[in-house]
Length: 120
Image (cartoon, rainbow, N blue to C red; front, top):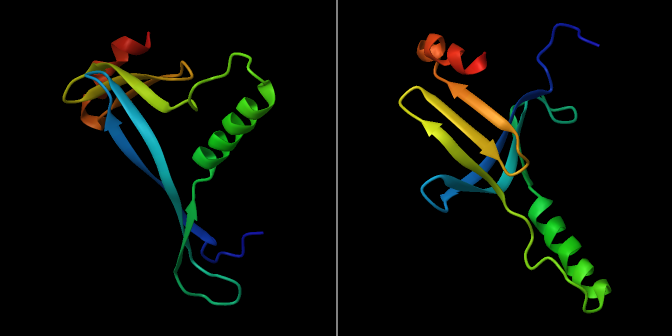
């Protein structure tokens, strides 16, 4: 239902740390999510809600229980890390590949014509 009023959620931002692991690899550590609300319950005031990202904790718990119940079998040594590898980088274009093999091409708006060759 849209009665013309402001949406309840104004924005959603995920705050991360980016750490250089090597010349081409960047590790990502998710910190928290910030939700900007225009109203909360019956209050029509801007509210910021901070939500800790549970994924690192949940991943550690899965690895812990995996080790606990594997009884000496080969076990993953550490939880998987979120990262991306930079394949190409200049002043207007970045191409990177994530740990899940997703490929991203990011272009500044004024450099779009230069990037079209990569999309063919």
